[in-house]
Length: 285
Image (cartoon, rainbow, N blue to C red; front, top):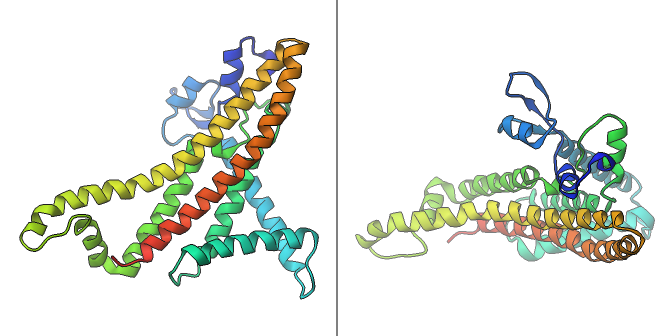
């Protein structure tokens, strides 16, 4: 763990390394013991810690929301039920103001995206050494606890949204309407000039469409990865003596308070863009 790493760079690398399972270069299956070994495992390697903590957060989300639903009454809500109703109303207001289609899946999807991403982001407020230290005591070499600092998780979510956008684009507009949307804008003209502009329009629209899931996933990953890196750098200050360690403690508190805004804002942005993209999929041009 961190106590066994002699250098600052080794400490940082350790905390940024995922617990990776896959096929090693010698053909055996197992956990990677270094970043190089994890890289050699290739595309089909699994980041076990990312999967574990994302499922844990998702299970907690389901547990508390199902519990709140079972306690729902006609009276004035309080406690957990009041908190859950506030989140549902907040998400519902954003869906009503942004989405103008009739697909019933958007509101539940937006709620799931917001709460799940927020839960994974909030894992960033857990002190960086606590869980990795417990994992090391159990013989687990690496343990990253913030799933959204893993680009595989953020891109997986954004690609899922992208597939829904493609599905509803074809379903609502039809194959011909969707194809026309990709080839008849942003530049429009009468025949035969529209044929000349077709490949240009197709290129521009395709680039714009592909950029949506890429920016959606990388924005969330970049902000959370940077926040986690700062927490790790602050943690290194505790090794610099009493004065530097005291300053690091104060700095960590200030950054944690500020980071609360970041984790909530990034979950909100991911939810809003999901709604916006699905709304665009339902609009006819």
